Amino acid sequence: MSVEEHRDIARQKMKGHCGVYKHCDGADGRVCQRNAYGKSIGFGGVGSGQSFYNNYNALQKIKLKMRVIGENYTPDTTYEFLGHNLTLPVMGASLTGVNSFGGDSVITEADFCRNTVLGAKDAGTIGWRGDTYTYDWDFMPCYDAICTAAGGWGVKISKPRDQEILKKVFKKYEDGGAIAAGIDVDGSGSTIMAAYSKPVFKKTPEDIKELVASTKLPFIIKGIMDPEDAVAAAEAGAAAIVVSNHGGRVLDSTPGTAEVLPAIVDAAKGKTRILVDGGIRNGYDVLKMLGIGAEAVLIGRDTVRAAVGGGTEGVKVLYEWYQKTLAKAMKMTNVPTLEDITREIIY
Ligand SMILES: Cc1cc2nc3c(=O)[nH]c(=O)nc-3n(C[C@H](O)[C@H](O)[C@H](O)COP(=O)(O)O)c2cc1C
Image 1 (cartoon, rainbow, N blue to C red):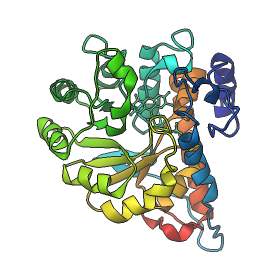
Image 2 (image 1 turned 135 degrees about the vertical axis):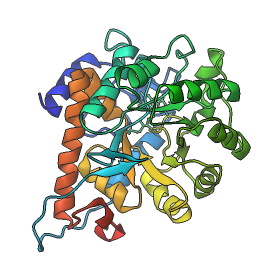
Image 3 (image 1 turned 90 degrees about the vertical axis):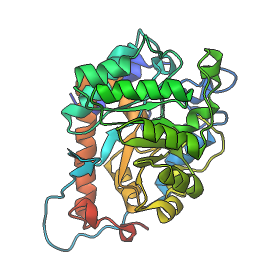
Image 4 (image 1 turned 180 degrees about the vertical axis):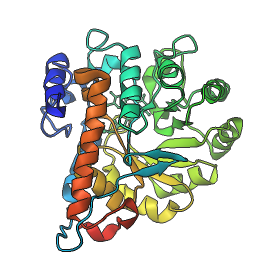
């Protein structure tokens, strides 16, 4: 089945949570956005939805420079991430919480974890997993998916919980052979974690250094929106950072990630690997993010829809479609390999 057919199934299953619209932009009137006022966040953005909307619209403002006279070639989308060869510079974003998109009757958390991790693996890329208030030492569906089902082929991003808990979790993933681990520093604003007695904290550079030193796994900091934070994360030992506002889910009125990415790249390129997410919906968007300096991207809401609509196969087919659309975009902008991508291809 195609991406569209999986999306049609997801539209039925996610009724009331996500309209699976042609444009997933978090605009006023979208069903996900109606959840945001006084209710749980659901599948939308926090508060007014501006941050979610800004992610999508920042990418719409960027245009690709078409260059079609020259040598013929088949674009090479292969990408190396932390020593692993991937088919494309696109990975599954750290995601959790099926309650946000319909609950167990739509998909169980265990199936969601397995679908996203194994579907990514089948497509030749990596599924990342997140952390939420239902997770604890006795309920680790991400661990089961990454370390048991996928033999370690996955990345674990924990909420910025208590340091000692984090060290224990990272050790478990390290022993389970995971590719990398880290924290979403922008999760420090979560009130639901505290409400379920799993408090989260802002982390100092010293805290991050301590976590980096506690594990042999490459360490990732997700939720960077500012050059100074990017440099601080790099100096604390982050192997990679993710420029992200959590899909517009943590702080109202932030810019889109594509708006802040160039300055972060100018400040931190060469000091750490710079990834980005937010509002990316096809290979053309991927190329735009690479054009303004990211080395790879993560896909959030599209991954959820694919997992709900098509299971493991749905996720695989989605990333294959991203590969095809990225390859087409690279052919039409005269960039045979990822190394050839520069800001020159962007208007
Ligand atoms: C329903 C949902 C759950 C999410 N859960 C997590 C999580 O547990 N940990 C995390 O780091 N980010 C989480 N995110 C944020 C994503 O990793 C990612 O930053 C965001 O979805 C990217 O934007 P996009 O959805 O427009 O692609 C979640 C996002 C959504 C929509």
